[in-house]
Length: 389
Image (cartoon, rainbow, N blue to C red; front, side, top):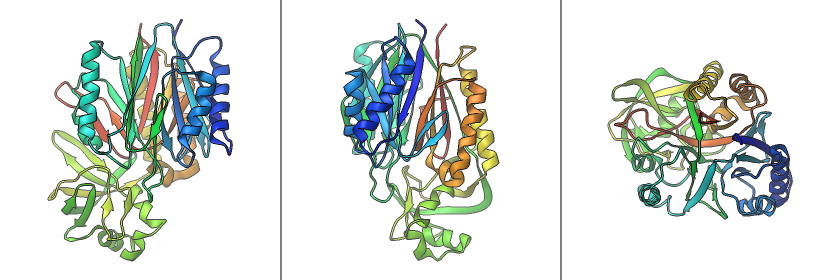
C-alpha cells in the first residue's frame, strides 16, 4: 500500500470535542487503512491535554506529535481557533514518538539524548521531525548537537508572547519547555523547501550589549530607543502591546561566513527595560541590518519553497505537505497570507492534503556534510511527503 494522508479540522469551545471531531474527519478521509502517525496542531489558548484526549479517544495509542500555534493551516488557509489533525498511513511506514521534557533548561543535552537513542536502535531514520518550545530553550544549541547525516527538521511552537506560554505534544504527553520528536522510517521521503520575504533596507547597527536571549543595546543605546528613532514612536510605547510584538516584523539580518544571504534573527517582544527578547543568542560586536518584509517577496518565497520541496523529492509524487510559517507572516499580511497557501498547492498538485501552523522558528537539515542542521527565523518551511521508489 502506498503512503496516504488525510487532514481534518474542527472548531469547538471544548478542546476535547474539537480534537475528537478533527480526528474523525481525518480518519474518514483516510479510508479503510490504519493511521501510522498523527500530527496535531492546537490553538495555543486551548488545553492541550484535553485536545489530545479527544484525538486518542478515537485513534487509540498511535504515535502523535504536535505543537501549539497561533492558528492552524489547511489547504483552505489560516484556521483560527481550530484544531487540525493530519494522519499518515502506509504498509511499510513506521513511526515512533519521543518526549524530552528538559529542552528549556538543556537544549544541547536533549539533542545528545536523541542521538544516543538513534545510536542504540542502530537503525537509520528516513526523517526526524521535531517540535520544540519557541519561547524556552536554545534552538541553535539543539541543532548543533546533530551531525549533517541526521535528516532533522521541524519548527518551534508559538503561543502567548507576553506570558511565554506555548506547548508541545508527543505520544500521550503535553507540556511546555519540551521537545517532541518523531522517528520516521519505511520508505518515506521528505522534500524540504524554505524561504522568506524580508530584505535589508540599508540601516546598519552594532550589537553593543547582549546577554543570553536579551539584546540590550544597539549602537550603545537601548534597543527600543534605536527603533523609536527610526519609526517615530516614543521608546516607552515599544514596551506595551501591540507595538512590543510588532518588532517581529522588523527583524535584524546578520552576515554569514561563506554566504551572501543574511541570517535573520527576529525579536519575540520588547521588554519593560527596552531590551529585545530573542529566541537565539547574538554576539556582541556583530553588525546588524534592519530588514523589512514585502508581501510580494513573501509570495515569491512561498512558491519557491514549494518548488524546492517538490524538487527534493526527485520525481516522486507528493502525497501530503506540512507547512510551518513564521508568525511574522501573519503579522505582516494577516488574511492575505491565505492566497500563498493556494499558490503552494498549485505547485504541489491539486487535492494534496495540507496541514500546518504558525511558528516562532524553523529547523532545516544541513546543506552539506560539514554543517549542522540550521535554525531559522522568519521563514516559511514546506515539507512535501512522498514514497521512495
